[in-house]
Length: 357
Image 1 (cartoon, rainbow, N blue to C red):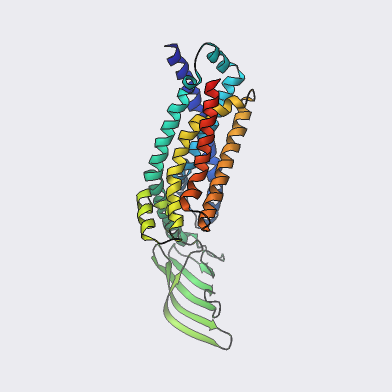
Image 2: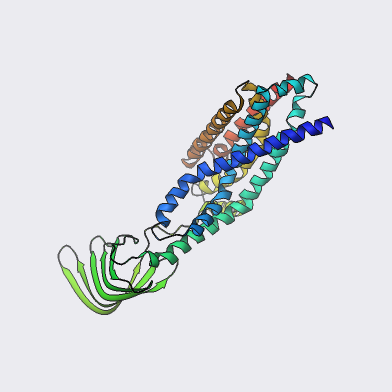
């Protein structure tokens, strides 16, 4: 009964620290992506609701990385605090083995492992698909409203658009367009009025009335007067393409088998990462408590520092191994799994050494 009470209190502190670490790390890692997307979406007038949806869709892919990071940081902070307050010394003096003291970490670590598999196999790919669809929808649906009268608009790639009057969202008057998509033959278009005739996921079509077009090249120029003219404009932000992160591990394996090397290497690396990062949680539940005792009396700050250093070293090795695999210097499975295996051997050795004390 006493052991149950001790484990319950340790688990409560560990779980609270874990969730706080998870929220903090997710926020830190997502900040750069949000800033990059906000520069694109603010141009087309994305609403706060759109940004909230995008932030939510970005969370599951982040969890594959932040779950093991949060587990290690929470373990080091919690057990480091207990070690600094001599609570672990008291538990050992009372006869509690090291393996018994770390049972709460095992519970959280196994939960993180299965949560990581759920994210890798299902939640992550679905959220990335939803993210691409949401960004595409926001850009194409809100771009017409972002065209303001009396303002030079640069929403479209290699296009400058000026509208003198805009009676409503889809109608414009006194239109000036400079089109340099063809660098060798830039165009200047002017029209008395126009309207947005079509908006889809790839471009926006304008129908211009009573206008004039001037096409210039090196040796000559062409002038065209028109009563009606359809013009399709592409947005500055390229529509997000389908990425490997949107595929499930089964789809990655199927596509990799159909693709010849070296083109299949990125698919295999993505597949290995989906499996290796959740597996790291099982390794860290052995490594975390051992490192917290090595940290001595440094407490929370020392645990946080050690945790970030260990995971940074692991991630650097992972990126380096994947880059070697991409260049063909080593096999893809060696580049993807070597950091995990090295970390696993180190964790087992540390755990055994602490268990012998």
